[in-house]
Image 1 (cartoon, one colour):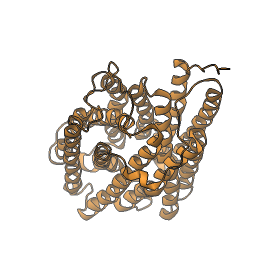
Image 2 (cartoon, one colour; image 1 turned 30 degrees about the horizontal axis):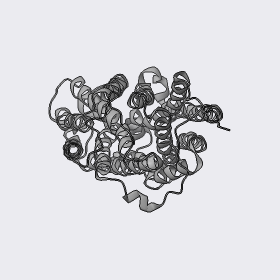
Image 3 (cartoon, one colour; image 1 turned 180 degrees about the horizontal axis):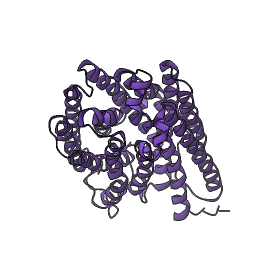
Image 4 (cartoon, helix red, strand yellow; image 1 turned 90 degrees about the vertical axis):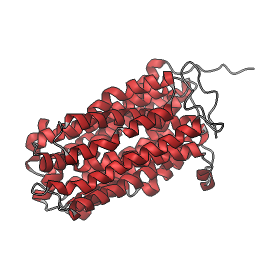
Length: 430
């Protein structure tokens, strides 16, 4: 007696899954970026220095040095729906603790709890997309998910405009962030129900529950590690800049908080529109390593333009926006082509862990650089040291992308330059 083969989920069902996991990411991204427009308010009302503000962002990243890889193990062992719910609940509790008091240690504890959940939530969602869309519209789905996530960032960075009255106190914007973090739990709960139903009625991509040993972490190939290196320097050049961007625009370029928030969100606005388009394009043309090299090169001049010239700020922010759309739309899906499906959760977890070490440390470094150089409204030149650090990171991004390109066009490549929807991959390398 033969068992009837189950059908795959319908396209509508898959895109419905995408909507709800993206809703969870929207809430997470809003809660993370709620801090940036508040930097000067925290300085005025709570007497925080740039080091203190960098420390709050560092505490978000710090637990991920340990928990994101563990999160990858949890996904591999417990399954997506259970791990997604655990991470979503932590992503709700953390912002609540941060909003509860103006004492730096307690606020930092809230950021730590939030970081334990939010970055592992990102790994779970990334793994979910690979399960539901691998061999289909994978890069396009990644791009749409990033767009929805960055809509959370866009809303947070523009909150000085649509929630202006909340900025009368430091606590108001954080309370709004708590409200949005509820979406993390809602999205995870709906995903739980949808995956549970799908496993009973449809044939889904596998998520390994095999035991993952630590020695597996060292079995990923050179191309994987070059992508990880690019990931670290790229996000270290973007997120720590955004931490201080509104404060920088106010003090160095004399903008209002509302306009400074909009300028910072311009980066996100570009990415929201262009990321899925780049994802769709890359699915068709390949050339992934080459495009990552082009995207990285855009980061080198933008910070020095803002530090040393009075160029219209729309220009460097638009250049950053293109880079911020192109590289993630190519980089994250590329991992699914070079790492075997059974280790994908661990691979994404390791990548996110090292990313957090990078931009967590650079939040501290840029906070120190601004404080060391006495960067403020009376000394805007004090921001130049930090801007040079960001530019060097852009240069390193070009280097790693170039090395990846050379690797992929050689005999040890995984097809990153050649795989397209017309010429799909037959199997991922281990």
